[in-house]
Image (cartoon, rainbow, N blue to C red; front, side, top):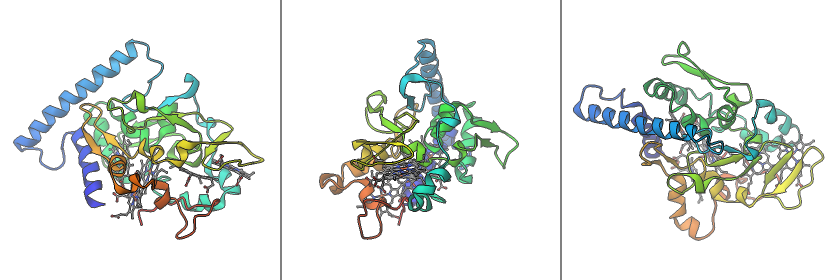
Length: 280
Ligand code: HEC
Ligand code: HEC
Ligand code: HEC
Ligand code: HEC
Ligand code: HEC
């Protein structure tokens, strides 16, 4: 846990230039030169894509795309409290979880602010993609240098709730074939908010919304779209939770992330799995 978190944060800091730990050492200077080089590469790739009028990948360096390339607003997703009226157990599990705090998380906000300042905003969609996909997709994320110690971010009320019910349940597929490493990661998701809610129940019938069976939602690949991070400049792995699983004995035995993180303690209830995504 500590190592993985440390490597993630270190990865974040690599993007920022290791400003905190050793600003005067030669290796820190080397790192900063490398980061400047990588940031320039990201900037040039982003500019090239924009010039080519690439409507398909509008949120680089995140690999988020929107089905039908339509323009989205926060009203395209439904507030989790509404979902919670009929799905109270899932709501209790999600509310207060890391997913619900992914945008507000003060540690995240501080590192994101450092990245914003060090790269002139070029990392905004990278970090924001996973921590608030709707904020990136609707362009409502704003940076306020006066917030907090390092500056902070705000977004529309739905996007400030991070990864909410309707984000996950309207994801219609993965953009694995579009990523630089041809693997799940860096928010390789297709957003398709609307009345169709997707998950792994067969023949679900709801009076409030349409339902659709989604094999993606029953697979670790779904989680891997965000739980696999590589540096957007040089594609170096920053955090590889999904890859670690993929080469583990669990994957060989067909045991998915959900089988451990998405279950009642002992029973595999069809309805009402826990949504804590607990780290146990
Ligand atoms: C066999 C059960 C099992 C499977 C399969 C599994 N996990 Fe875990 N996971 C755990 C346990 C247990 C912990 C707590 C480990 C610890 O704290 O050291 C954990 C910890 C985590 C954490 C917390 C942070 C950390 O670094 O420790 C994350 C995030 C996570 N898992 C995501 C995933 C994802 C994504 C997948 C699928 C790609 C997955 N897990 C597959 C059991 C599992
Ligand atoms: C991080 C993504 C994610 C978030 C956030 C999330 N879910 Fe889920 N949910 C899933 C996945 C994946 C499944 C399929 C689980 C499986 O196969 O074990 C699922 C299953 C479900 C199901 C089907 C029944 C069941 O329990 O298996 C319902 C209903 C549901 N979620 C509602 C909600 C609600 C309501 C919220 C918000 C309070 C929410 N979900 C938040 C990923 C998410
Ligand atoms: C591909 C998706 C993805 C991207 C991109 C991403 N993160 Fe994360 N972030 C995660 C996941 C998943 C976790 C939880 C990891 C775990 O515990 O294993 C996390 C956890 C964190 C944490 C730890 C939060 C805490 O309170 O413990 C910080 C800090 C953080 N991220 C900062 C950043 C910054 C800064 C950036 C941009 C440079 C960034 N992240 C980009 C997915 C991402
Ligand atoms: C008026 C009650 C109601 C509300 C509000 C509601 N749902 Fe449902 N939902 C249901 C019922 C009933 C089912 C069917 C459960 C079954 O068949 O086991 C269902 C099923 C689902 C499924 C399973 C779909 C599948 O095919 O696997 C998901 C996912 C889901 N809801 C997500 C949501 C989300 C996200 C929201 C908020 C945007 C929401 N629901 C709001 C009643 C509701
Ligand atoms: C849209 C991107 C996204 C998806 C999809 C996603 N996660 Fe996460 N997850 C995150 C982020 C970002 C965090 C860290 C939030 C923070 O603390 O700032 C996180 C945190 C977690 C944690 C808590 C880690 C800890 O250190 O306690 C677990 C466990 C977890 N996710 C499991 C899963 C599982 C299992 C799935 C698939 C069902 C999944 N996630 C799908 C982005 C995502």
